[in-house]
Image (cartoon, rainbow, N blue to C red; front, side, top):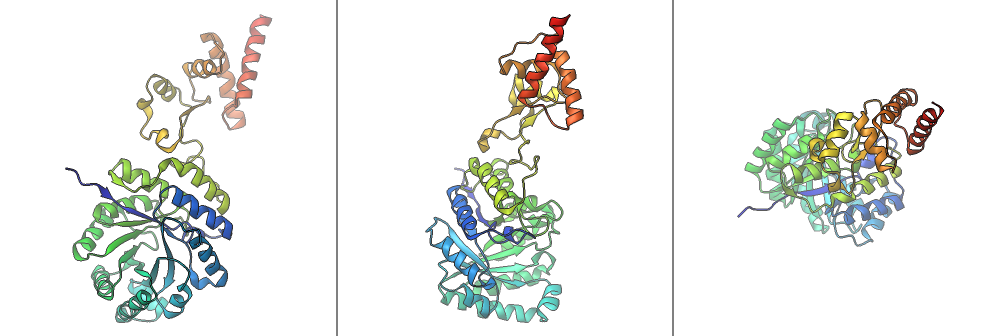
Amino acid sequence: MNLVRQVTIDDTTLRDGEQSAGVAFTRDEKCTIARALVAAGVPELEIGIPAMGEAEQETIRAIASQDLNARLIVWCRMCDFDLEAARDLGVDMIDLSIPMSDGQIRHKLGQDRDHVLRQIASMVPKALDAGLDVMVGGEDSSRADLDFVLKALEVAARAGARRFRFADTVGIMEPFGTAEIFRQLRANSDLELEMHAHDDYGLATANTLAAVMGGATHVNTTVNGLGERAGNASLEEFALAVDRLYHFQTGVDQRQFSALSQMVAHASGRPVPQQKSLVGASVFTHESGIHVDGLVKNRETYQGVDPEWLGRQHELVLGKHSGTKAVLHIYGAMGIALTVLQAKDILEKVRLFAETHKRTPARSDLMDFHRQVMAHETAH
């Protein structure tokens, strides 16, 4: 009997996503996005940073008051001030974050490795006493000595933490190394292991998948890959890939991604690029004559991702790279039967239009081309 493999998505759109330079969600927007994420089946949400102040705390309380069917998490530095700010907000878990790399320990904290281990040993029990599950966030783990990271996991487990977040804070990891690191973490610890990837090399989703294959139980994502600098691992990319390529279950409804994507794009003021994988407006749009001909005959000829998985469908358009068969097919779908000669005449107009206007012709443009061709035939 095959065991069902599962991985838990801890979406951080409302925390790291909002840390994108220039992005600022309103309280209502945060509440609405949280509801939409949970409605789509996302089981965990990282929803804010209590130490930012009273307004942020009230927003966190507002999200928590919606009684969402999800574990709610807040991000804190591993210090008493941040823990106090996180008390009594109605959340379930606290991420107590502290640097792992020698560079950050020395330059950010002005401390040494022993200080980090002492902080973990003292702060985790305090958070547990406050009624919170605890995740130890290993900031800059990807540039840390792995033996020290393993020691931090050991101290965290002994102190009562539930999870360790391995953060690729500056986005320097690659998938093969990531998988190996997580195999070593898994072999040496029974803690839940969470991957937090950044996309500086364009590898955040790949690294997150690799972490899961190496033993990660939890992953951070953001809608549209929003996040600091180049962003985080994309919710839509990760959830579809881990399901379709590796057969892990996430419980997330992929048909909700388009609506989620547009909601976050609007709230963040960051439009989704047309060719953004899975949720971009044109990723299931086909113009090339060879592709259109193949799709008309059998859609699997040029389909690796079925748009129906995402509640979408293929769209065939005419442009510079279209062929006569595509013209015949698209006009046929509009209820207009063309001869091959008429289709060739229209194709010339389509190609000129595409070069001139830098876009595909709309239905109204296609109707104009048809009228022009018919008028020319009548005149001759």
